[in-house]
Amino acid sequence: MKSPLENRSQDALALLILRIGCAWFIFVWAVNKFLAPAQYQQLAQHFDKLTLDETQVLVIAAVQVVICLCVFVGWARLYTYALLAAMHGYTVYRQWPKYLDPFEINDNGFPINRNVSVSLCALLAMIALWLLRHRDHWSVDAMIRGKSR
Image (cartoon, helix red, strand yellow):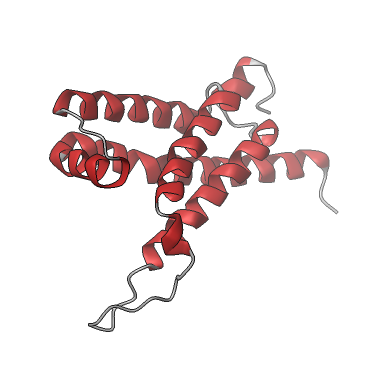
């Protein structure tokens, strides 16, 4: 049987891995908004019927990057983990009909909805991270409170 300290360290390591993975998943998409803002302008028009100028896309990207950096280090966990899940949850919501047919094949025999399955898994991981935030002992929040041991 493991000691409470061993369990605490195992929890902290697992949540560190989960936190970095979840933040990285959104961070890549956020940075891509800086690299190809026109693509995100088109997506906003297509999915949300919104016309965004390039500056708006860049501001959204900057906010997302800041949230991701906060999640990377585990700062303001109650809010930043929730914001990360909410950002991605909106993406999942916009594509909801695709989840109803995860095995759809196009005319070329290619499965076209499997990427949305990955997105759903990422969202569920983000929700789990938020639910377990109190066990994320290797975070800035825990260090500030003196509970990172």
